[in-house]
Image 1 (cartoon, rainbow, N blue to C red):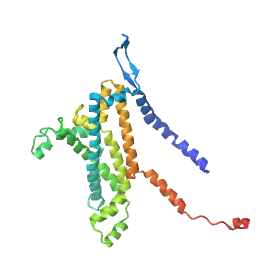
Image 2: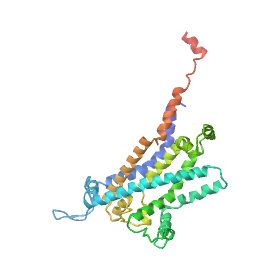
Image 3: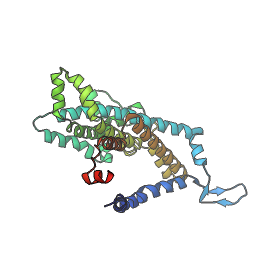
Image 4: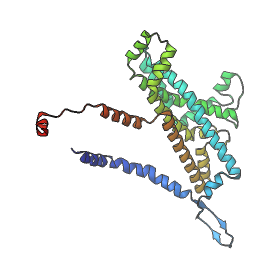
Length: 320
């Protein structure tokens, strides 16, 4: 089959996927952008006429985000979202990589250990939030362990750390499992060569294990970063709505929509979307998580290194 025919066949086979993506991604995104340019108003205008329904306001919903009391609430939610992302993902990387290293070594009952580690990740987030809400009650398990009466689910910095602990417990296994998949494709010959050269365990980890597992680890971290930036259900169920210490951008957008302010809610959602896209772009470009780009580069290098076939006898005779 010619390259042109292969391209048409590939486009035909991928067309159902493109249609589904257009319905579930493109259409809602365009609708949100359109909604963010309108504002619902009810009352009497300057001329004394009754105004009802939506009115086109342009970028007023966006400019209102950065002004007055609304700006204070927005920046608080923005900082909370960013801090949740940085702190949670950093802790999950350390715990997840440690879990992967433990599971990678041959030990009795390794299959059971892997299955049990999946349990927190498989639990629905709302159920997990209720579970940790019970743990962090004033008379719950957490206070019984530390021997102090801390109001974990009340307004304050302790609520932030309660959400971080719950999120880490639930999603660290995700990073651990993807890292384990990367560890299993590393050849044992590499470690044997390192032992022969006299490398200790720490040097082997930094010079061999971490660089070779980097592609899988970066993909796991990228997924987790994008997931935490959209955090909503865990702090909402566990701590509650309109709590400044844990309110995120998603919670802010939901609160506006609940109060029938769909235009500002769509503006918040759009700002969050732009924030997620920028973080993903910077992550891919700076940290080298561009798996597709790396694959294309390797393919081009292989083609350049491929030997040029020698001309056949008949072609050589024609040339003479």
